[in-house]
Length: 251
Image 1 (spheres, rainbow, N blue to C red):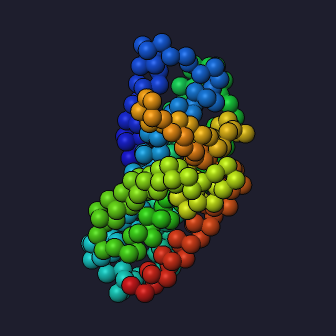
Image 2 (cartoon, rainbow, N blue to C red; image 1 turned 180 degrees about the vertical axis):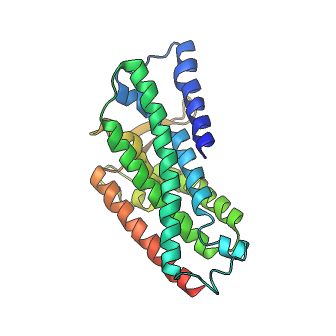
Image 3 (cartoon, one colour; image 1 turned 90 degrees about the vertical axis):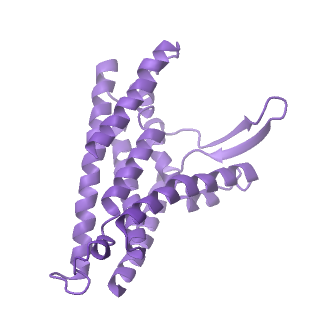
C-alpha cells in the first residue's frame, strides 16, 4: 500500500508540476493551495483502495480462510473485532502519514514554508479513513469472500455514491438552503480533506454545463462545514460499527 501511495504521489507530481508548467499554467501562490492539488481525487482514490484492502478481510476472512474463529474463538469476538479494527486503522494511518510527508516535503522545497493547515487536513483524512474502514467492515460482516467485499465496497463508494451526487446536482434536489441530501452521500465528507486547507471556503457553487448553445445550470455542494463533517462522520461510524457488531455476534 505504501507503493500505491507513492505511485499516486508521483502521478500527482507529474500532473500538477511537470505538465502544468509545460502548459503555462499559473503555479499556486501559497503552499496551502499547492498542497490541495495533491489531496484531490487521486488521493481520495488511494485512500479508498487502501481502506478497502485493509478492511475487506476483517470479518470475511474467517469464512474465506475457514480460520475457525467464529466457532472456536481463542478470545472473545468483541476483542477480536476491536483488535482487528485498531490494527487495520493503524496500517492505513501509516500510509496516510507517509503520503502527507511526501506532500509536506515537496511543498517546503517549493515555497520554503508549509501552512499549518496541513495538520487540519491530515486529521480529517484520518477521521474519514476510519469512516471508510467502518463501512468496509460492515460490508465484510455481510459477505463470505474477502475479494468480493473489497470490490463491492470500492464500487459502492466510487461509482454508486458518485452517481447519487450527480443525480442530486442535476435534478435540482439541492439548493443553497438545502444541504441535507448530501449528508446521505458518504463520499461527500471526504471533500473536507482538501477544503480544510482553505477554510472558510465557498461551499455551494452553481455552474454551467452542456454543449455550446445549449448549456444549463446545475448546483452542487462542494464540502460540508467542519462541524457538519465531524458530526456526520461520527454518526456514520457509530451506525456502521453497531450493525457490524450485531451481525458479527450472530454469525
